[in-house]
Length: 155
Image (cartoon, rainbow, N blue to C red; front, side, top):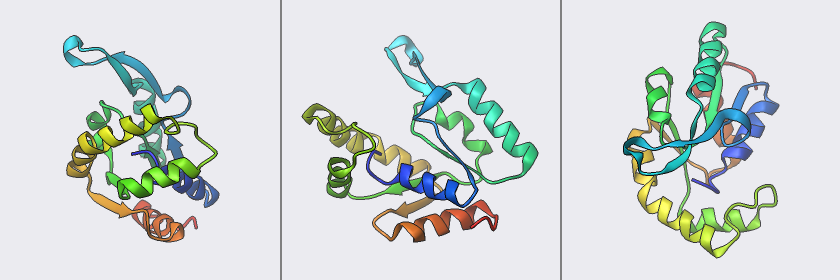
């Protein structure tokens, strides 16, 4: 969900020389038809995510992938862990209001969407997660926990 600290955590993992990919940015996603022809929604470009994961599997180096899209579950069997970064809705909204790096969530309509998505999508994410990290804890602690899950001593 927006405002839980994913971008900050990814940046700190990169500073520790981990490979960390934010699939909300760049060429990782495209608007694609939803199953049943009920519209379109941003989804992972499966060919590109496949290549990213295959490279990781060949190298054996830890890889952290962040993003939330409707087709991500297709890749879950290849993930060592599925991590949910969580924070209460008021904390998320406060962080979104204060951040200057991402404009999403600043308008009343976007805030309403975040509230609705938190009610609808957060339970789905929680049910598929293997690890939940409460991002109200100190950010260094969250990054340390992820590094330990990654199984390498980069940081």
